[in-house]
Image 1: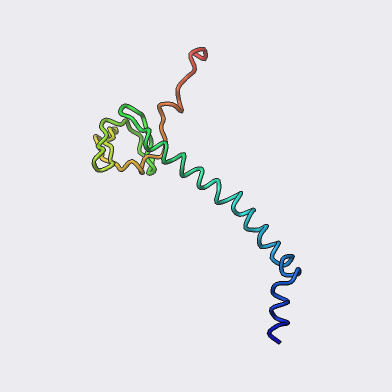
Image 2 (image 1 turned 135 degrees about the horizontal axis):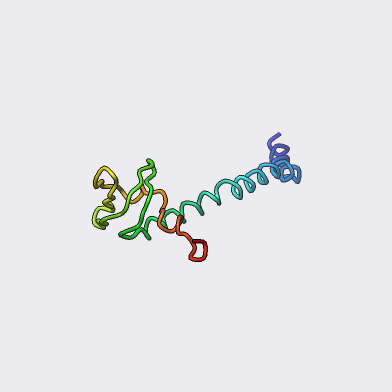
Length: 107
């Protein structure tokens, strides 16, 4: 009885029955996991490239300009219309300085 179960488990049919699951994993990796890893790397690179004077938008939607960077506790001081606010680097979602630059010939 046990030998027939072992033969069924390691036979050629088991590879064919596992093929859809393997293909499903490959598709999930290519379309979901890999792009997410790439996005995380780009965001980490962006957060380390933040410089003084950049116009930014935080993840909560606050627009401002970076006044100071405090490296010891990984925070930045952002000047907004309401005053100066201290944020974590990870709270900054995008930079407006580069995004909205007008090309020289377009004016």
